[in-house]
Length: 175
Image (cartoon, rainbow, N blue to C red; front, side, top):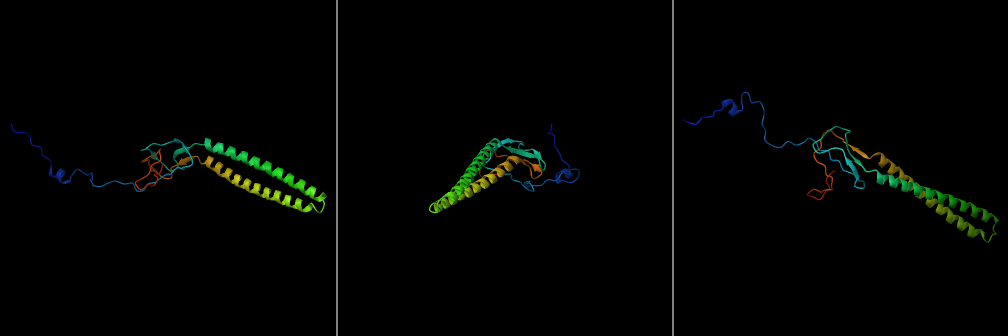
């Protein structure tokens, strides 16, 4: 009535023989980690992947909300239209002052010259404002076109930080 004795072959105890699965101690780490940061001035509308998903280069990861950008574009277009109207008005005013200066007496010529120079300065200021707004409009339109962020590398999504988080040193974690 003795209890059964369990035995193993010497080959399985020493790792020799049929057991061909190598065993190693330690951690498996990725060769490269690609971190994707989101633009803090924009709102994410939709995340297209989840943790653990396999992605290829060019796989869409997330999309930005474009409603705010479209409203900003419309506002800048209205500002540009207002600046164009002011420019037209100032140019008409300059032409009128130049016509009146030709008819004015020599005593009044100086005051017309000062007024014309003031209007010319306003025209240059509005032209500068128009160039700034035009540049702003181009940037907004470019950001409207680049509203989908894609993967730059092949791999597995390890982590998604939907809410802004920081690491132990206070640095912002990637999205």
